[in-house]
Amino acid sequence: MKFIKKEIIIAVVVLFGLAACKNKSEKKTESNVTDKEVAMVNVKSLLSEQDFDTIVDGKQVKLYWIESDSLKLAITNYGGRFVGLWTPDKNGKMTDVVVGMGTIKDFIDTTEPYFGATIGRVGNRIAKGTFSIDGVQYNTPKNNNGNTLHGGLKGFQNVVWDAEQPNKSTLVLKYHSPDMEEGFPGNLDVTVTYSITDQNTVKMEYDATTDKTTPVNLTNHAFFNLNGEGSGTILNHSLKIYATEYTPVDAGLIPSGTLDPVADTPFDFTDFHTIGERIETENEQLTNGTGYDHNYVLVENQSDDFNHAATVIGDTSGIVMDIYTQEPGLQFYSGNFMQGKNTFKSGAKDDYRTAIALETQHFPDAPNQPNFPSILFKPGESYHTVSKYSFSTK
Image (cartoon, rainbow, N blue to C red):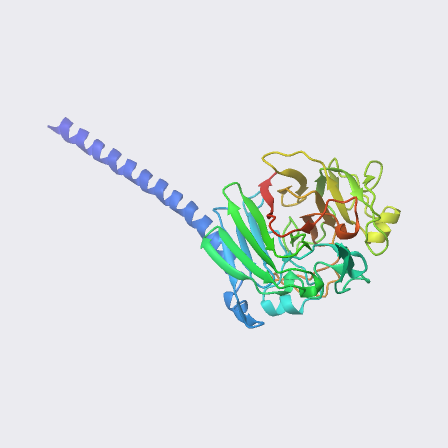
């Protein structure tokens, strides 16, 4: 009997021990999940929805969130803007890789009107603000050194889009651009669908219809710092662009119409280089752009109907961004005109070259360049193009 009692006592002790271990394990798992959930919730606490809840031009403006388990994107329907984009760095820390303002007022008052914005009708420049369709000349506002930039004085970055959120990972934005808005012919109805996929990817899908032939070149103008907003220079980011040619420009950043090889120039990013490695090289094109502000002619290396356009690596965060697109070009802008005049949501200033833009699009001044892929869009045609930003770590 004594032996049996001892055996029972041992069994009970073992069972209690196993239960304690199980509880400890469960608490650890719960703690990990909670930490992750808390990290994602804390991201949302960085922005106040009240600071975006207002009326502009008689239409409701709001802040929207789309997300996956490891990617969170804040968007406002004022200008269809990316306000911030959080992804884990190499240590798992949620890092905001898109610079932006913390309130609608700051977006309206900024001296840089394109932070994070959806751009249209025509992204990039139109020389002298003029183009012709079927012998009819059209004139658009000259808002950049005697040229039209990003759709004119009130491009799509300054309008309030109608917004629908069908699920937690998707936001659908719609805008009706009336005939002759900013000098462009035709009633243009645009739908932009921003979504986050399970592959840690932001997908940007652009659709449009028109009732008159009109030029259309839609894109997004997110400014990136892969080390995080307010972390300083982007000159040490590594960049690879899948292009062997680019379109050189004059002092007004209007293309000459030629496709020049990047080989043996500071514009050769066919292998990884840091952005700052050759940016101060004595070169006429770098002088014209005050750095990099040029369109690259993407090599057709399609996989699933997408060209791999570029890869960027944050030097301290280890965050890697791969860009895929159905567009023929990529505009690389190295933050040359950032002047520290605006304050981001983190409290940091938009200092010189602290963010870059990599815009998937057709070529600049395409309506006036017969050798470039056309951006003329006709009634009855389907305008549809998709680009993606995919994130990982190294």
